[in-house]
Image (cartoon, rainbow, N blue to C red; front, side, top):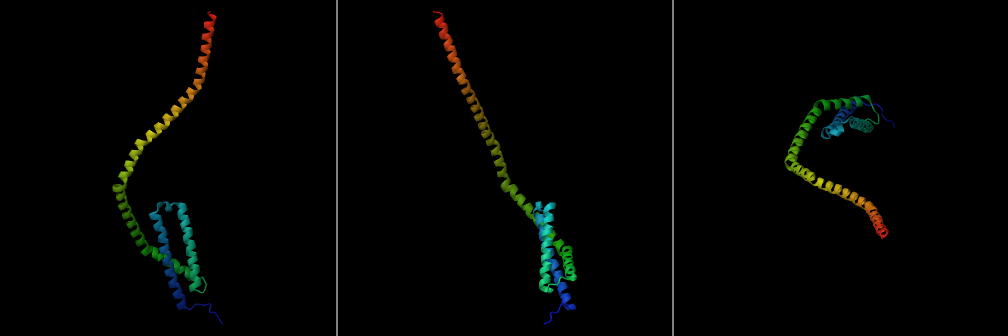
Length: 183
C-alpha cells in the first residue's frame, strides 16, 4: 500500500482556497474580539488586549493545525499559511471594516436609547433616593454622636459619683467632728 505524499496542482489550489476561507473565518473571530472591545471599554486596556491577542493567536494556530490535519494529510504547507493570512486581510479590509462600522453605529444607537430611558425612567428615582439619604443619614449620625456623648457623660458621672459620695462622707465627718468639738 502506497500513501501519496504529494498534492496535485488542483488539490493544492483547493486547499489554498479553503485556507483563504479559513482566514476569512479567523477575521470574523477577530471582529468578535474587536466588538467586545467596543462594547466593553475595560476590555480595551493594554493588558486585556494583550490577553485577547494571545487567545486569538492560540485559536488561530489550533485552527491551522486542525485544517492541516483534516484537509492536507497533516502536512502544514506554506501556502496554507499564506492563504489564511490572505483571507484574513481580505476580510478585514473589505467586509470587516463595514461590519465593525455597522456594529459601532448600532452600539452607539442602543447606548443613546438606553441613556434616554435611564434619564427619564431611572434617574429621577436615583435623585430622590440621594435626597432621602441626605435627610436620613444625619439623623442616624446625630443619634450615634448623641449616644457617644451620653455614654461619655454617664462614664464621667459614674467616676464622679464615687468621689462625690466620698467627699460627702468626708464633709459629713468634718461636720460631726466640728459639732462634737464645739460641745
